[in-house]
Amino acid sequence: SQQGEEDPQALSIQEGENATMNCSYKTSINNLQWYRQNSGRGLVHLILIRSNEREKHSGRLRVTLDTSKKSSSLLITASRAADTASYFCATVALGNEKLTFGTGTRLTIIP
Amino acid sequence: DTEVTQTPKHLVMGMTNKKSLKCEQHMGHRAMYWYKQKAKKPPELMFVYSYEKLSINESVPSRFSPECPNSSLLNLHLHALQPEDSALYLCASSQDRGGTLGEQYFGPGTRLTVT
Image (tube, rainbow over all chains, first blue to last red):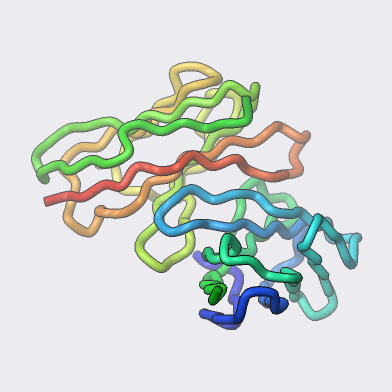
């Protein structure tokens, strides 16, 4: 079953703008991960943030985690056409050995 | 080599056919996974293998039969599928981190159509 909800479901922005996606989840977690999926292809791991971390950066990506609100956000700065994809958050619950994916955000970058 | 490969890329099969999906990784990962993904939906976990042993079966119908012949290979045997089983089937692998699941590496998937 899906644990996470993401919003927005779809987002279209101009190239060069920043894109922000949000993820909410329901149970206590060990870590939260973000993945990108280009149309009909496999998923690519972007970033992992542990439950004791509040913010993490990787290149143009910035992820925040608020465990008190059970939410996370992914910020992509200076977007490019190649960032067009679906983005999924995925959580690893405490004592669990599986990923549970959120509903995903479809991001479209308009050149 | 940080790649997970899957064959075939596309598969069309009838409801009475038997076919197999194959997945391979050479990263030394000891956990491997099968996911099913319907269009515009997130991946749904089907099976987890840890050290070549089935550790999680998410109540998947018996017409899907996983197999892990060795630490690099994962198969999914298909028999008597239904049209609603048409989906993208994704394989993934990850390192054993002593119980804490880290990032997973995904293959490109097999697009399955059941007619």
